[in-house]
Image 1 (tube, rainbow, N blue to C red):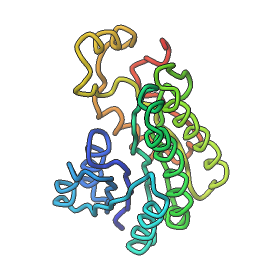
Image 2 (tube, rainbow, N blue to C red):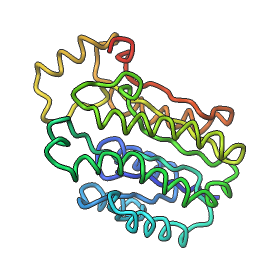
Image 3 (cartoon, rainbow, N blue to C red):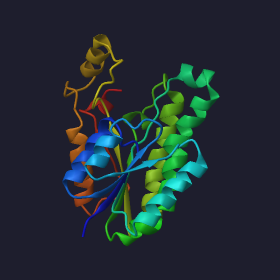
Image 4 (tube, helix red, strand yellow):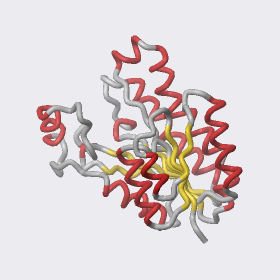
Length: 235
């Protein structure tokens, strides 16, 4: 029987590459996006169903839940990957950005987990993976709101792991320097790698392999796995 996955923020970077990997494995895939369809057309051509939702809007999230619930009775994997990365200056000067940080990383995952609980329970091996951050444990003073929101998602991971057991497992992945952004200059990249014991940019495959590990090991729940080249040891 074909398995079903839901990935938020599926149009780019990790979400996009994970979506392609799961489609290759034969999954029925719901690929969430907000406003940009970058990557979504390619995923749909491979068999995914694109689902638009604005995660700063409760009605939009609930509409996404209804769309998925009407299309499938079972969800095997929910990956809460969507993110917005704003520094202190941005959120201090834009109340919408401040609200979005907590809505995207807190409200949306909560509503998706709660709204799809029945489908996840019907899987027989339902799994939720929340993408948090190594800074959830040791926050950066330059991204206070972002780190606090990710820490909330980490706490939510443990709470749902307790409340949804034994029918659904809930875990988190804490990425480090997986894939630099285009705006990261050479000096920044070198500084980050100098503070990373393995001294390499990890790439997305280690993240995808960690998803597979959590999926295939049925005796892990409530855990957070760092995929960071050891950077969490240094910050």
